[in-house]
Image 1 (tube, chains in turn green, brown):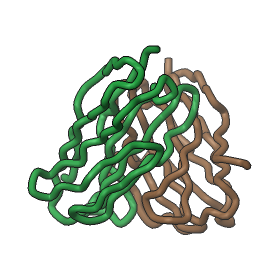
Image 2: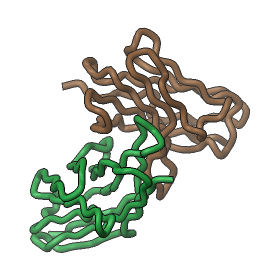
Image 3: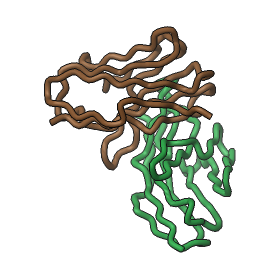
Image 4: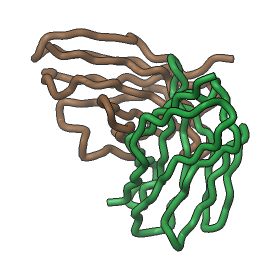
Length: 113
Length: 112
């Protein structure tokens, strides 16, 4: 079935460092791709999305580009802050379902001052 | 601003007992989802409602699980004859736009 694989954490970075969290996908159709974030003590929330190849999603300084040729949707941020410490989940819309999102296992990010 | 509310936040029960979780979505959202998350894993889709209609159920949702959304507002997820393997965080989410989900903080189930 459709699935995503994301890099394992935890990832520890110093403030202002560059962030990349890798995500690759396997899908039979043309899924939409998402990054969700879960801050400590809060529910998951949508960070950004891309609905077709070459689309770039962006929000709060984070970016991810839908790369069909490499089946990837890597999350990047040029300069992380302590407040970015959270768990990041890559997800795709399941082509076998009109409604389900399939999530990766999550990558924990800790940013230190 | 009222987000998605889930109750109870934590439930400890003995194997074989029934449990029920409640989800109150964001009021204007007609789409409601239940997911399950275990430690170290991402959320797994269980079921989807559009208004009061349950339009999809995952294979993960065994016969012991039932979900309802009467009148298209709040939803309940009931697990009958709980098993230790049911221990997990049960997440509810709602949305207006497909796949742009707003999640609650979850209801953690521990089955002893």
